[in-house]
Image (cartoon, rainbow, N blue to C red; front, side):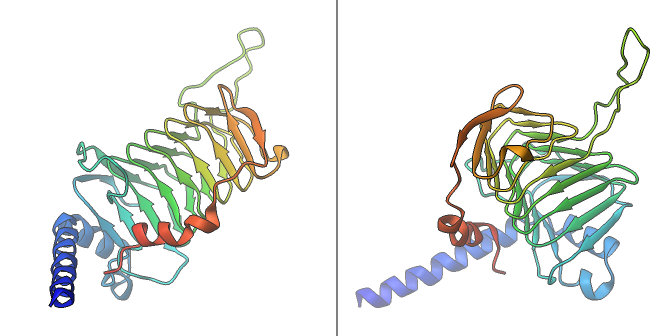
Length: 253
């Protein structure tokens, strides 16, 4: 009798969570985006699923998916962190090219800006945490399993022209950003133009990254303003967490 009751409870709980999931989807924005950006046979699978409030400031750019098409493989506004409620500030400016190479998970209240002629690319199981701002005016690449912590910012431009006050020479406004695979970026990290990180890299909270760090090698901890090497032989247990991350981030519809 107890086993029967347990089975009933599991089924009711599963149904309840499934109902919560479907209720939390912004179906209007989800259907509109997919059928606006993809051919019918792709759009009908709803590869992009939006949760909560999101503003499409522009979606005239190009979206390329280099992976098997599956419903919700790109989830925007998905709850997978501590904060459950959104502030209602999620925005998308898609003017350039957005490339998706596998499941992508974007938290609540994220600003994603891909400017005209810009190239923004996400690797397999990459992730943007809540309140992240990603501004791509030239080129931004996130490697496989690259996770960006909440309230961080990735910005490949200085936005304003800067010059040498003595020579009058102007400094470059933009600089491409390449985040390596298996990067664990903590919260409130600023990743600025010309940043390049190695694979298997951990970046501490409140760090400023602004140059090429690949010469430091893999399995490192970086931190500081600006970032510097803090520790070698330091890595996240990716193998131990992979199945758990897939369980909580890949939605089984």
